[in-house]
Image (cartoon, rainbow, N blue to C red; front, side, top):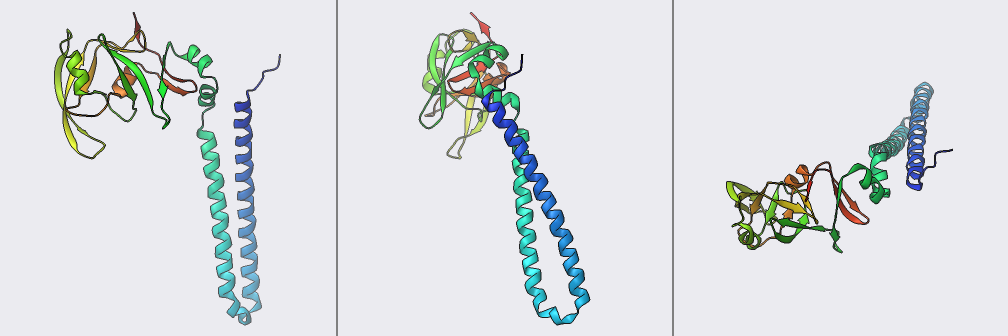
Length: 235
């Protein structure tokens, strides 16, 4: 039986082939251009000084052509680099999120996606449910003061330290960090004890990297929106 390639895999291989051909063609053109310039320079020197007034124009034209060749070569190299850094495994993940996540990850949490592209997930701190913005740029889970007031009396919630955080406005704010005994994603994926930072005022709940790293390896799928994770305790 012949192995069948998916449409995305076929496109990937075609673009890779095109990038290689482009780089080879541009390199060959630059090589010929260089040889031709050397030959013309030699002939001009042999002919004599009567062509001296045209030398400046010739030099400018040659530099302009050389610049165009360099730009085309750089474009080909960038295209090739981009194609080669796109992992076929990543293409497979993007193409078949449901099938691949079932094979590579042990749990899938549905996400909600807004019109602006931001994604949110439902999480529980103990038995208190709330919505969190998925934010891989945040180093840790951050909760609003209002949400923390609902969970601060849960058993095992203890203050561990203070951290300084720079807000989107550019201001630096000190935040208390607490450890909660149970932080869950979705219906029943318990990440166990987890540290959360508490905002003093305003702001929204953020699902940061300390939660994602404890569930790693993980992947985010956009169609349908889902957070696939590998390590969690189901209950």
